[in-house]
Length: 149
Image 1 (cartoon, helix red, strand yellow):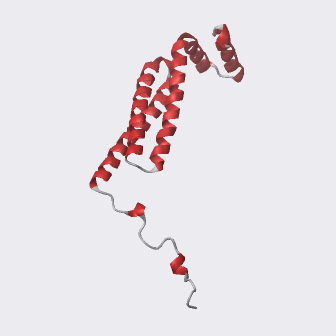
Image 2: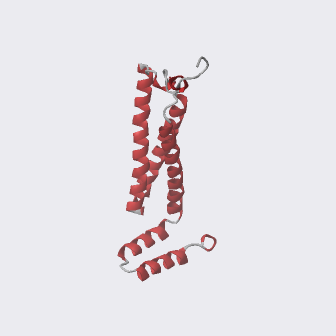
């Protein structure tokens, strides 16, 4: 029995873990600021989406919120990499930046075809049946320039 290993000696959970070390006040402060910036980023990204879906006439407000979201997202991304914050913050920031990039494309498309999108939105709001909604979509497709169809 002199050379046998005991189960408690083989347990990798024994001993201090590097991730459980107490954080310094500076690290806690940096994480708190990053959390506030992350929340503001998510609020602006979601706000731009909801304002855009509300009415296309508010595309200017949605553009402002999207630009603010992109700026905040880049700041949070840099801070989360620099201060080595949890991966959940990094994943959420990258996901939010992808959503903001898609919102940029939607806003640019809506600005370029503002008249057509406004007409379609007004038509689809008054459409009560599926055939009326299909007719609105057909009118939108017919009103688009040739290469866009």
